[in-house]
Image (cartoon, rainbow, N blue to C red):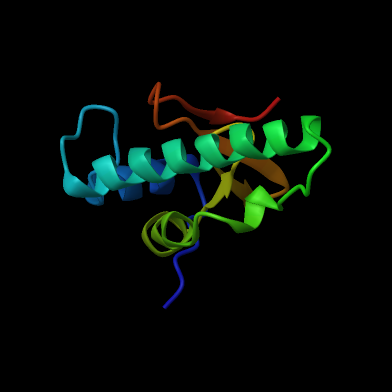
Length: 107
């Protein structure tokens, strides 16, 4: 069963239900932050590889389990570069920043 929130309120509810909010001390939240930090580290490593003229990696396809966690729990996707979770609802993009707790329409 895939999760497809249809509003910002539904997204807020899913974030609360799965303990992924800023004020949560759940295991799921610590795994989410750990996964995002791993992605950030891979992006930084990849940038160093590019600067050195070595192979560059597709970091958007890395991080496996954290992408699955976000998809299965929230119905969203990770924007690796921006370190946010995104949804496309009714033609508008919504972003959740798990570091700041902000949930808003992308500009």
